[in-house]
Each structure stands twice: as C-alpha cells, then as structure tokens.
Image 1 (cartoon, rainbow, N blue to C red):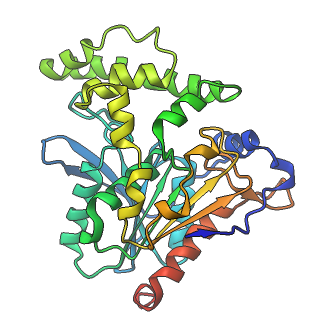
Image 2 (cartoon, one colour; image 1 turned 180 degrees about the horizontal axis):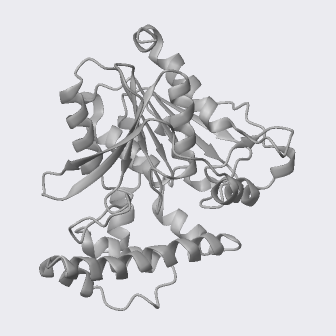
Length: 337
C-alpha cells in the first residue's frame, strides 16, 4: 500500500544534500545510557558484536546500520535514545568488522547478506520466546532487512519492521552515485571501503590467518577502483560467492522480495535521495498486503529533519518509526509498558 506522508523538510535544510549531510556531519550524540556490548560467535566461528540499550522485559527492537556505519552512527544512537524513552529496548547489530574490531574471516557484509541477521534473530528468540520483537534497518541495513523478511515469509515472529532510505535496486543506485554531486558520496564511501580492505589484510596476516589473508591479497591493487560497479565486482562478488557484480546486484536487491513479506512493514523513501532515483521505487502491485510504502517529497538519504529553529533540529525519523512500531504492535506491544 502506498501512503501519503506528513513529512515536510525544515526550511533551513530544504535541499537533499543538506538533509543528508547535516545529521552525518553535525549531529553529535553521546552513546545512549545503559549501553552494553555482547559478542556472539557465529556458526562459522567468526563473531558479531551487538549493543544493547535498556533492561527488563520490554519489547525489543533490532537495529541494522548502513554501509560503513556501526552502532555508533548518529541515526542508530538517536533511535535507541528515543525508543528507550518510550520504554522500548533495542539491540544494534554491528555487521562483521564494523564494531571497531576486524572480524576474523575475509568475508564481511554486503547488501544481500542475511545470514547474520537471521542468526541474531534466532539467538534472541531462543532467549526470549515470548517477547514482542521488531526490526529497523537503514540504507544497506534496510535492504538486508527487507530481503530477509521476504526470504523468511511467515516463519518470523515479528510485530513490525521499518526500512529507511533503501537501495531497492542496487544497480540503479550504483549508477546514480556515478553522477553529479553524488560522486562526492561515492568517493568518500569507496575511500573508507578500500582502506578497510587494506587494513584488514594486514590484520588477518598478523593473526596468522594466512588462508583468509590470501583471499584479500588475491583481490589485487584496488587503488584504481573508482565506482561501486568496480568495487562490488572486484571485492564483494569475489569474497562472497557471486559470479560477478551483475549477479550480486540482481540477487541482493530487495525490491523483488517485497511481495513475499508477511510482517507489517513500513518503508520510508525520499524522492530526492541522492543515493538513488525514483526509478527504484516499486509500484503498488509489487507490495504485499503487509507492506506500506511512505514516499516523502524531501528528506535526502537518512536525513528527514524538520523544525523551524536551526538551533533545535527535530529528527522526524525517530518519531515516525516509534509511532509506527507502537501503532502496529497494538495491545501486545503496549502490554509491556
């Protein structure tokens, strides 16, 4: 179902790039109070780190960050604070290698990697079989979330899910980042990713994991890589078992999974998102009866800032997400208040 949005960008940030850059560069948030880290050993003997916010038996929201992000990303910390203020616990998954310590295998994470979110879900569900769960993903994390929801169909016990600024068609988004001002975002992300690969190779060699280090060494010199089409072909496809970049983009893009989602899900997209074009947006007949698509006229990429006072920006996403979770959860969700 396509729904109308009440979002109206702040007049002083009425531009997609300002909406995108302001929270990423200027929002300063300390970690939420009562954060506690836990390390989970994955079935392949690697690890993921998760960061808990809140105690007790309140409903639990799983949070997924975006590319080169972590549980310390402003949108994750901000949402954790807002959720806890409403009496909702949260746990933020740091994708492999994103928690401040490199993981121990050459593989890490990508837009279609759903094994770790499913592992986390199963682990938490075994511990808390009766707790209402929800999940929220941003950007790459939103793509992972939607793909996972579609793959699992009716096998999940989730009250609700929200995905924000999702690269629903990866090929189109990669091409969009090759054009105009968006090339600035592309250059910054690729610089971080290439440095990560170089440093991880050194780290794995230092640990004595020669076989894993050799997989990264086999990627060759990445200094000439200057587009996501090249990076995802040279790195993501090779490290994660895809035939090539086109195979990766086709199999990992989440739009094709929307029809199979049975969890009540809200997808929030801005038509002016500089990481994509409106062509990635699905039509109403591509959505299952459980999916609501809220398309805003502004907001940029994981921006969505409102308010009339430049000294007091308001982060609409945090309020909208919390509102949806509470409304969708109904009596079962609020029974834990």
